[in-house]
Amino acid sequence: MGRWNVSATAVTGALTAAVATPRRALATLAGNSLLFRVVPDALLPTIGRVADSFADTALIPFVLAVLAVRGEELRLVGAGFDWLLLGYLVYQLLPRLFSDADPAASVVGRRRFRLLTTVLVCVFAIPIADQMPGAFSRSVLPSVVTSVVNQSDVFVSVLVGWILASSTLIGLYIHRWWWREATIDERVAFMDQIRPGSPTDEQKESMREDLSRDNWVAPVSNGLGVASCALILVAVCLFLSFIVGFIGILFPLPQVVVLVGVAAPAVGKRLPDGVISSGTGIRNRAVDIEMRFYRVLKYTSTSRKGMMVAPFFVVGTLLSMLLTLLSFVAIALFVFIAIYRPDVFLSARISVLTRWNIAGYLLCATVPGLFSLWFWVRETERVPQFLQDWERRRPGTASVAEESLPAPATRPPGVLLVPTAFVSLFPVFFWIGRQETVPFLPNAAFAVAWPLALGLTVWAVRWTLRADPQPPWTETYALPGAYLLQLLWVQVLFDALDQPLLPTAEFVAVAVGGVVMFFMPDLLSRTDRTTDNGTVQLVLGTGLSGGVLVLFGGVLYLFEQQLGLFAVAGGTVVIALGMIGAGILWLDDRT
Image 1 (tube, helix red, strand yellow):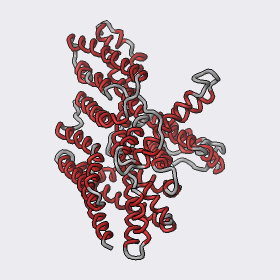
Image 2 (tube, one colour):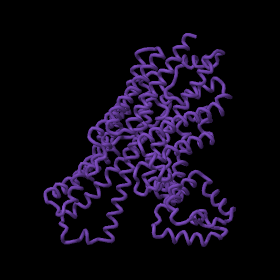
Image 3 (cartoon, rainbow, N blue to C red):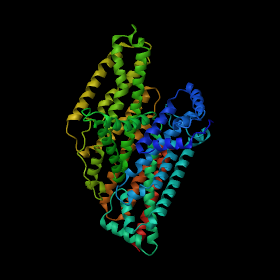
Image 4 (cartoon, rainbow, N blue to C red):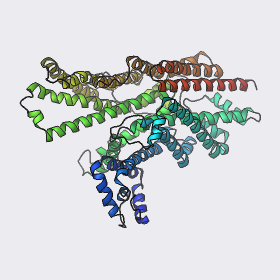
């Protein structure tokens, strides 16, 4: 290990300057992650020796101080910065997922609570990411731990243990640090703001009576109130764990996005007047996208329908980021060949038709990811409006229905059918590349097909920028449609690489199961209209949702045991909690 006799004042000063603001902290973590992960292996010993030789310098920067470790440890340091970056994003994001009003804002926004939930998210996100191969991945877990956790039965046990531990810790925190000192009205308001949906005035009054009784109903009602809020927060943490785990394998895309997001406003602010809308265009655009993203997260965590819309939005965005990362690799490969091996393109053995198709090959690798990412950016101006419209049409309206929102943006025509034209060319592209000699007919067909696909894409972009926006309710079919198309894209891509991602039966199960879960809130809303009895509504709601999870998990278990067990366990827990809650409501009505 290198010598760490660096001036404590210098290191402290460097650290303080680096984390003075959230944007500086994000830039510092992203920059260090990139630095440690992209250093060539051949330079690691040299960098380690150079940094160690300068370790006595009093004004050594923080980065060089960290570089003073042995060269072979730098990759692990880079992985550590990756997770510090992702954890800091969770820490900053969590308060924006819930109401801005007290008491929810004061509870969720506390530093100790944010730190607790950040640790819980990252604790489970690390083993999730460790099971996914990344191009530059380096596990932060010891190999013996990785080999054990990756076993299906052990992973499910870890998941169940994490849920129980997280529920206990969050429940104890809420009870110990806030619930006991809160008034009855504050407790009712907190449950209203944390849990999806919105109770009626009569239901709120009933809750106040139950929480303030002198008999056994009061402690049970308070316990259930804390438990229900804790379970909602654990569900949010679990959802964030899967997101963070997936983002963890997308290096260097998250780091680049963070650095661009931090740098763009600063660059735009310093541009001279008259450049990009008086130098503020870049900054305003970056802030606008950031605020729209936060609005989507807030609405999906508050609306009853939003709990099902969130996975579609996030998974679609992450898949688009993954495809965009692949497009960056394709562009880099193309540029590398053009610079260092131009003879590949200029060789007399390469026909004019093949040279023409080179542009088509590059577009096949880039258009789907970039177009779908643009699609989901535009959806940030449609998802909140859709959820608001959904809530207004149904009883038990959530608070999101009362807020004013800007007019929705225009969605690209055909959802994601336009870039699917390029995706359909994947098999042809890879098949031609595997041939010793390029066959004329497939090559000629590809030469005609890719300009048509490009023309269709250009038309779709122009149409989207000029047409009037579609009604918000049309997201009812647009969101599951985008999910199915992107799932098909990934399947076609891996099939073209002769590495099928999912067997046909499993692909159908995942596709159908996802769509069924998307429409589950609509089904539960219909069941609520059949009766005014809260106990019956709870039994019907949890029985239907839990039963669908169990059924889906049973089918999925035949193909993927780990995911199947997870779905069955989740459905069983939902049914059990529903029965317990229904029993307590039944007893409450008779006291």
